[in-house]
Image 1 (cartoon, rainbow, N blue to C red):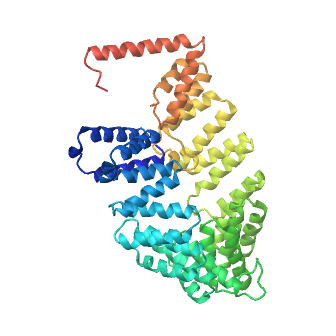
Image 2: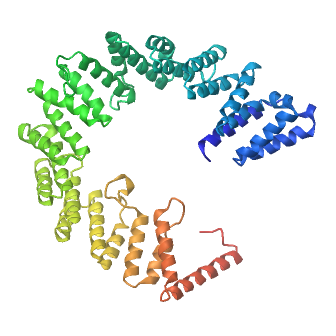
Image 3: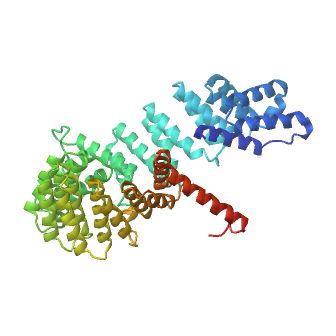
Length: 511
């Protein structure tokens, strides 16, 4: 069901919860209630509107006593009847219904849509004043501050938002601080703005800078840009080494690689003897790589290896160098780089990755014989480990591409005896269901249809069973082929007989 319909049903639930007893009105209101509820459950907005309008005309006291006018307003708003919705919400506020706070929220939203920000703020203030414990209170305060900001009344925006600084909702507190800082900057109160933006840099999790930390960095850069002599769009203010790294890391995590690069390269230029230069160059290359700018990425990765060969960044840069060559389809250079990595960093974390990447690079280049040679090297080096199974599955894929069906069936059969196949959590991993399907498909290509059918039937079917669906498709294809249909019919009859026997002997629930 669409989320707006769900919200309308929630509104209807609030109305029903607050309903006054119907007994004094007789049976007809109860029947009306049932029809309204039925229409809402079915998502039939027009029918619900018709029932509510009819009730308003015939028994307005029942409409208001049960707060149906709020539901009426929500449906009118949903169907584009803004003027009618406005009138419904106004009547709810006028009689001080328990739903007044929600009506005021929607009135504010309707007035904002007309561009009347002054009237919007009036409704928001009324909500805040009359419902101090409302669940909407903090959202109303936030919107009040935003409304002032949009009207360029920055001082009023700051004053309105200050109460949210103490909110227990961390998201509201940080969002309000962001808008306070931006308001101060717009009002040219740069020192106050700097303090506020700096507070945004105090992140809940420093390893995962959030959107508000990103806003803080951008605000600080805007202030420092303004204060930089002869500034242009490429100028970065003179900052400490630590500050450059901090701002760059926030940008990099949030994938603003251009902004991150300005700080990384400023650090390299201004602090050339710092031990952080190697990482700054590596991160610059990594940013280019993630932007698919592979030639620029290579330049920086190679610079790290040439200037800082013994650094930790050199290891990562060499790995990325190999990957970059592979992206550029420069297979020989990619393989050479991976081999250098294997030789230079035998104790690196996940040492099997370089071996497996060589197999993949050669496979993608269509160099199957060389890829199979590296499969054997990898299996020998990591015998009995998970990398052994991953290499064997890479071999299965190569045999599949070659149409070597006997080898595919043999590989899949061997893999099914392994306990750690990697699954979806490991690049290049597989699952028992995938292996069963591949073996069945290989057997089908070999003309061993009966065995293939057995493999396909063994894979469970269901909404989240991809290979169950693929197996069903293969079974349907076998059944539609005049040559293989009799075999499938024989299997189906045998299964049917077995099922009937199980039912007759009371064994249907067993096994």
